[in-house]
Length: 114
Image (tube, rainbow, N blue to C red):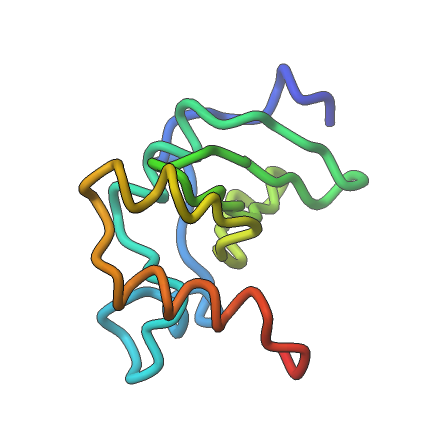
């Protein structure tokens, strides 16, 4: 599936159980700080990176934190979402993130056990 054919409307996708478990309110470890606004912005505005026939990533900078949302465009499901990089200065200056959130995101990014 070419990147032009991948739906950009968030409602086109249903979440997998794996994704639901990583959503901010679904579990105790909130290091990803993933929320509905991030998911929406990644899908509607993010760069589409295809990964074979059954996977694509939407990658978008959200005020200094770059996120990826992984979807299966054929089955129309969201499989995962996570931060992929952090520009600490830009993120801190944006006003969106608290220092505690940025520390959590940094811990997620540097955790080699995941």
